[in-house]
Length: 169
Image 1: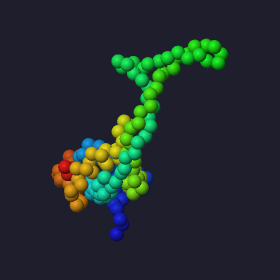
Image 2: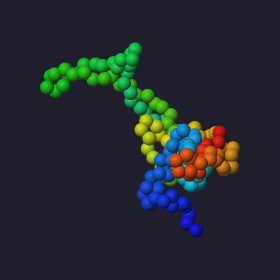
Image 3: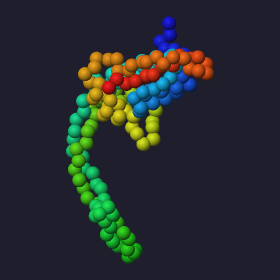
């Protein structure tokens, strides 16, 4: 018996479909798809959420120096300097600030990299950060079964069984 469904697709297309579905499920919290795809996505999403939950609080904080431009009423402050060629030019004034930055411990970093295998990049949103910072802390008390499947019936066009996948809150 094979370890996963073939979904009538070549390997590269099948992996791309599953990555897109898993990413969509994590981004929106729910997803409507066919039953065969839904069962595969549930298996993958449950495993990566379990990794995120296990490594949810496994980080440390350390101070980090950051330079940023000085501002006054929303505008950057500038000062005039003179170059070696005796021409004047404007330079933005900067200040150095020390901030606390979170740093992943090695096992959490490894879990992040494993999750990156099954998640696509989304412009403007870091899906893995959302998984670790928003979803995993809510599911910390659960012992598995993070995804629920609801059967919706048959699709009108081709009578494929449809399901709704939902992350349990």
